[in-house]
Structures are given as C-alpha cells and as structure tokens.
Image 1: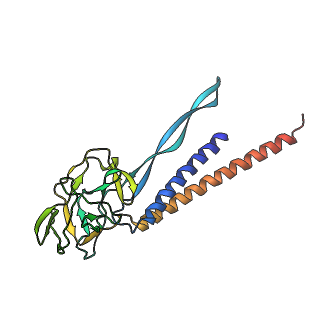
Image 2: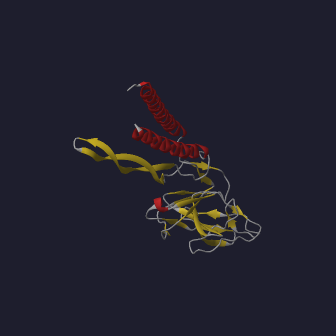
Image 3: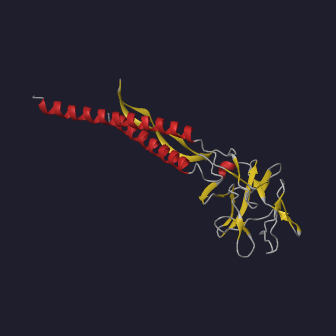
Length: 247
C-alpha cells in the first residue's frame, strides 16, 4: 500500500513538471523564434521487499524521474514586418550574438541600431558577422540591404555578411533567456540557409496541441489524486478495524 502511494506521488511530480513546460510553451506562443520544449522522463528502478514463497524477496519497483528537456527545432512561421533590420533564417542556422558572458546564439532576428551604429538585438547585444566581428553602420548609411546569403550592402557598398552558424546536435544548446542559447559544441558556418530581410520567425508552438496535452496531464494528475485518496481511506479503515479487534 505504501508503494502504491509512492508511485502515485511520483506520477504527480511528473504531471507537475509537464504542466510547467506546457504553460511555458503557451506563454511563449508569440515570442519571436521560440522553440517548443518537451520534458524527458526516465524510469528509476528501486528494489523493495515483497512477500515470497520462501520468505521476503526483492521486487523491482519502477518510479519516474525528470532528466532533461528537449526542444523542437523546427522552423516557425515567417511573418513580414517590413523593417529592414528584421531578419529570419530559413534552415537550421542561428545568428551569432556577442554578450558579456561570451558568444550566444539566437533565432530571434528582431535587430536594430544602437547609438554607435552597431547592429544589435532588442537587448542591446551586438550581432556578429561571419568573421566574429561587430557590424557597424555609419550615420549616413540609411539603406541597408541584406541578401539571401546574408551579405550586407549599403550606399557605401558591401559591408560584410551576417554570421549564421549551425550545430551538429542542436539539442546540446542550453537556453539562457532573452531568446539566447548557450553552446557547448563548436558551431560551423551554416551553408544552404536563407536569410530573409524584413521578416521575423514566429514561435513553433501550436496552441491547440498544447491545450490537448494540458488536458491529458490534468486527467493523469486527477487519477493519481484519486489513488492517493483511496490509499489513505484504506489505511484509515485498516487502523479502525485493528482498533475494533478484540483478542
């Protein structure tokens, strides 16, 4: 009976974690470049005592524990903005961003200029070119054109190329907030990706699918709650019967 209660609690912990992930996905359904997250669970086997034909034996009991999260790296829908510094990537690449904590990577191409003319993210972090340098425009450069291969041109000619990189295994990327990702693997220049000017990539979250998952998780949680209540009621009745037993 105690094992049943422990298993039920384990299932509730899984349901809670799943609900947190789903809620975060829904909250970011309109976040530019956001990638849907899914929790990953694994079985945790514990040997417990069980009554056997020749005394007490060990019986395996399987619990569930949260190990990590995976991200759906499929492309989101592209939306036209008309802003000449808004960029979207068609493919598996990432823009390279310079931060105080080192290089980071993003699919959010909502860029602009700071007071010094640098191409920066909405948080003010510089966007890097394919050589790892900051991209800086002169005040008189008002017409910026970015080709599909990432080449940047202005009235003064070609100014470089947007740094778009890719990773052999994108699942190793760690989200750090503000639409940025931290890499443990060394990236390579992304070939075959298309940079679209005047567009932004939307989130790849599908609200209806997330709501269906949320309903399933709620039902699983309710089932675990009912099992806990039944176990508690059974324990109470057992104690009551023992108290009524007369020797």
